Image (cartoon, rainbow, N blue to C red; front, side, top):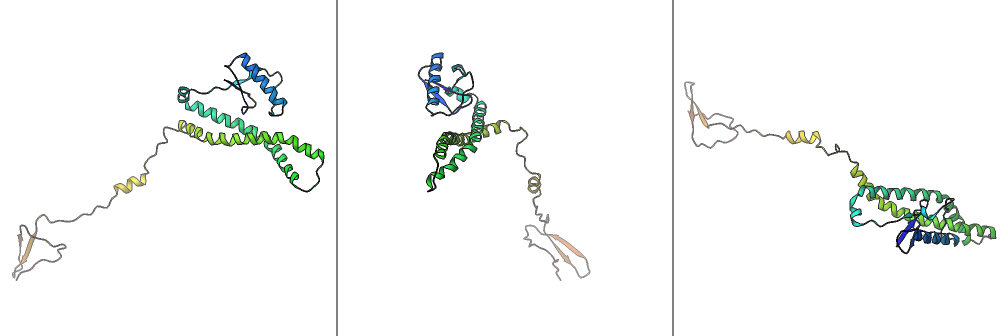
Length: 216
């Protein structure tokens, strides 16, 4: 099956039997004219438009799908931009038509001219509603595309660095220092005022030691 779209209306996709060929494009042209004549498609063709100006819509193969995610992301965002422009162009007229619809539900007398104006506006309202739904879907899909580009545009210097404060606080840990005597000893004061220091092996020292032990 060959599928074609229009540069000015990317939301329109025409599908005809066979592969892309001049004959398939002629069929697509005939289908396009039929849709326009029946009022099912509200779009304007540029003067001198020919089947050669159709854009072929191709399905990406799995290998192509994995090949270049950045290119895909740009295409998705480009489609979103195109839909946004179309939605903005139709929004004002569509909202005006929407406001007139409420007249149909009132008991107020409505002229035939007003009714015909509303009926004419239904085409614009329909086109806007369809485009707006596609735009909302495309915007949801474009979130992933935006993340892909953000990742690709990330600066190599944007690595997370450990804050200086945390380094200082880690190094400046409180160190508890306990003064330990190399060898326990006993100080004895004699009657004549002389002091004798005796080293005691394997002694049990109680902390803190604030007074000397005196023997008489």
